[in-house]
Image 1 (tube, rainbow, N blue to C red):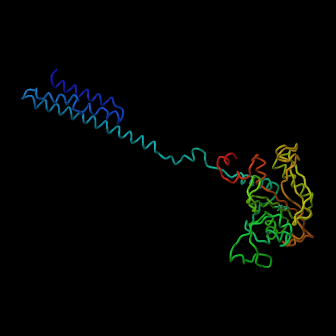
Image 2 (tube, rainbow, N blue to C red):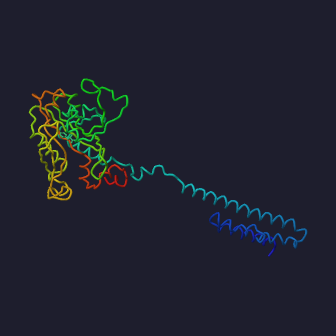
Image 3 (cartoon, protein in one colour):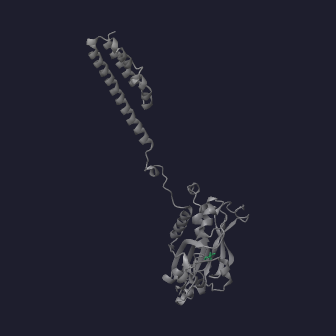
Amino acid sequence: MSVYDQIAEAQASAIGEIEKTGDLDSLKAIEPVLFGKKSALSSLKRLMGEVDAEERADVGQALNQAQQTVREAHAAAKEKFELSSRRAQLESERLDLTESLQTDNRGHLHLVTQTMERLEDVFVGMGFTVSEGPQAETDWYNFEALNLPAAHPARSMFDTLYLDLGERTEIGDGEGGEATNILLRTHTSPVQVRVMESIAPPIYTVCPGRVFRRDTADASHMPVFHQIEGLVVDRGISLSDLAGTLNEFTAAYFGGAISSRLRPSYFPFTEPSAEFDITCVICEGDGCQTCQRTGWIELGGCGMVHPNVLANCGVDSEEWTGFAFGFGIDRLALMRYGIKDLRDMYTNDVRFLRQF
Ligand code: PHE
């Protein structure tokens, strides 16, 4: 074999080695074979001494040419592998900012809000409007106007959180503009007063919202919870309208298997007053642990609006009568979904919230 053939063969075998590689690592691994002292071209260079003097220049040129060709093939392969490895790295580090939309992870309304909206829907369907009032109230709206004067023993029913507004406690918002205590409303009943002050009867309204009581959080109590208040003021309203409305609501919200009953009770702002119970939604009246084997669950308070309350709101109790009711929303949601611990609703663990 001529020396030129040997050079051509060494070049072809080096190029063949390069073509066999598939990535930067395997290319690096064959570099000694391509360029090292023991590479085919290097050994040929060592044979130069044996080549005839007049041929030496040509053979040398052929060797350099072959070496150059191998270098170029190596450089091209290296560039190709570097590019593709950079691409792979970029791809693996890509941030998909559209991910939250693709995975339907957008979240939804909180269970309490859902329950509140469903309750509103049922009452709106019965012809009621929805009213709201402030969460920070004056003593007048939360107590006095509701026939609960300062020393009234029934105030102890409500463990009240008072706000320390510093200088601003002098804000006069009570009857006659005198200074009043500002507190976090303990029930939604103050909205009754605000509604009667602002619109003339007939009134058919519900007032859902957040209420506050000084309570330690446990499985069935939270210092912050939600109520929905109902208020009807019209001519000739009687206790049977109250009973009928509550029964109608119960069937619309819970379904026909659940009914309601009234039990005599006491609230300073209603006379007569009652607690209203519904058929236990868990056992449908058979008796179970949730209803303590009575078949009934206490939902809230109600009664005929006290004439003193009507008078405090400028409503003539000779012409108008009315009823009111109020019940807790959180406990309702708790029962409906069989949730054991009220605190779960407010710790905002998405694994819990996602279920509803
Ligand atoms: N406000 C009362 C409570 O929180 C409930 C109630 C509302 C009672 C309306 C009678 C009329 O306990």
